[in-house]
Amino acid sequence: GAVVSQHPSWVICKSGTSVKIECRSLDFQATTMFWYRQFPKQSLMLMATSNEGSKATYEQGVEKDKFLINHASLTLSTLTVTSAHPEDSSFYICSARPPGLAGGHEQFFGPGTRLTVL
Amino acid sequence: DQQVKQNSPSLSVQEGRISILNCDYTNSMFDYFLWYKKYPAEGPTFLISISSIKDKNEDGRFTVFLNKSAKHLSLHIVPSQPGDSAVYFCAASPLGSARQLTFGSGTQLTVLP
Image (cartoon, rainbow over all chains, first blue to last red; front, side):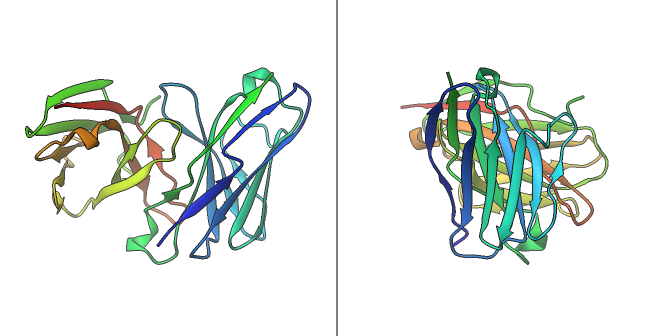
């Protein structure tokens, strides 16, 4: 149980284009999902908390107009990187927290999406 | 300011021996701690966790110890296996409903056959 998928697993795009990444909880409903990014050999940095049916909560320093998050259903959150630039190239990972699991602290992660902006 | 620190970027251990990975934190609001294992180009996999009301939690070959007074936790893997080679992240979660995770920088564990 507690499987999270991401699509696509990797994407290459031209500078200035927009890229959408999907995160799905496959066997549970998630009212809350999280989006992280990881640079090579660095830690996972939380970008935003995605709440089903309401606006996402962004971490300090993350541009909400650049990283659009939509959590339209209890099993799907999307991250759209708008007008992508080479500095947006990174590994983007989502996670979801099954409700009622051990106090709700554990998050289960998707496999990640490697974004390369040319 | 790093609230969760893993000061050893890498660790090499012989197969069959004990691996000890360390993690320190500074935020007193953290009340739940987790260890994740990560392979390159994959998402982290949950390993084991511990609540601040405990000082030890064991699951098979993995044991996590928590020293609240020192704001220190460690992950012990016994016996270590080559398949354990990966990056291990320590994470902490605070009190409150958001329960966001703050990650350490990770430790690359290499288990030598």
